[in-house]
Length: 209
Ligand code: PRP
Ligand code: URA
Image (tube, rainbow, N blue to C red):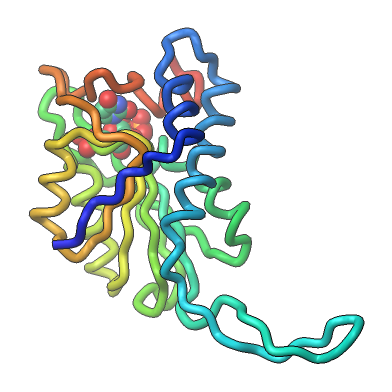
């Protein structure tokens, strides 16, 4: 089973604290989600392979390192995952973007699929699934199921806040998936919300409540 990486960087922790505040408005919330994603992405891409290439500088030719091999695909879980896409694309503009539409039934907390479109040759890509919240883990487990059913193999999952229950569920269902998160919170409440959490991430990004 892969280990969970929790980012303890002060900038990430500070920005997550502002994100949690009930008085943080939609615009600032969106900006923070993007910034936090960028910071987490920087760290989580540490193992991307490099290859040596020869280039010409204004002074001479030289050998230097550039990203090699697997191309990156970022796959947000709709809706809230959309808020994280630009954070990844700012760092890796050549990444392709897939989409998986899932919503949680408010009563049963079971995820329901309504959309799935992944980039071509998904089996050759390093895939990073993004969603700000890992609560029961149902949505993340389903999203990874869809990707694997369509041939995806090398998968990372990145969220901003995780509940211990969600981490356990994702690790149990998909022990090969590397999990990255900004903070592990205490627990889920009786409605399946993360405590202390930040509320409904989709509603706060898109201003729907
Ligand atoms: C939220 C969140 C995750 C999911 C996490 O989405 O963005 O996708 O819940 O919960 P889980 O780990 O228990 O599955 P939601 O279903 O509210 O949809 P939305 O993004 O469209 O608001
Ligand atoms: N989805 C959210 O947006 N927030 C939670 O706390 C749990 C699931």
